[in-house]
Image (cartoon, rainbow, N blue to C red; front, side, top):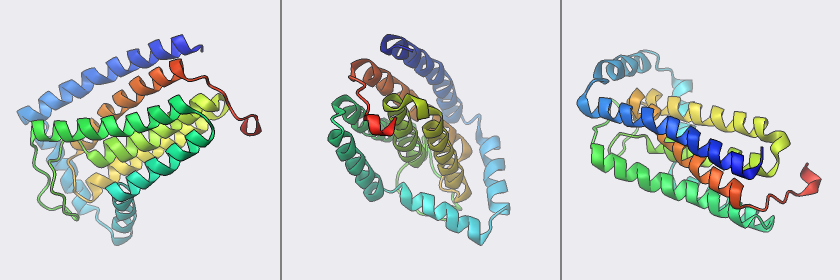
Length: 214
């Protein structure tokens, strides 16, 4: 697929995902998802196990600001070392835009978190910032950009990124830091940002790939 086709398909996919995110946001604000969220939260509480809590805490700490910032800086330096300027810019844009949109939407919706959470968070619940930023923008976003540079390995990169994002989302509900629809919203909104930025990067990047890694 040439860069122009990648750009068009990326924007189309983002549009398809933005619609369900908007609908979900309306449902959340209207309270129509309360019974589903309550049922999921109860199931997570009933299935609590010490070792699973420890695993979920690893994802929790991995999604904190210091770890996310360090990851962004290290990966950006790596892209710059490969002289992939547009890819480096896209990487930073994915994370920065996702962070800003997450915070803006949290303030706009103003949803409270579950009261029985195993971790204490001060921000509003919807959408999940851990899921949207660390799970999608950082993990899936990095996978997509690596796939642009090394298309013969894009399925491997994307599989790893998606699995990480899903596990991050599940960990947030397992710790009862978020409602189920919070993390679904984070996955959808984060994917929209990643697709739009990646489509632009694929169009503008020279796509020069280190031959040693092909």
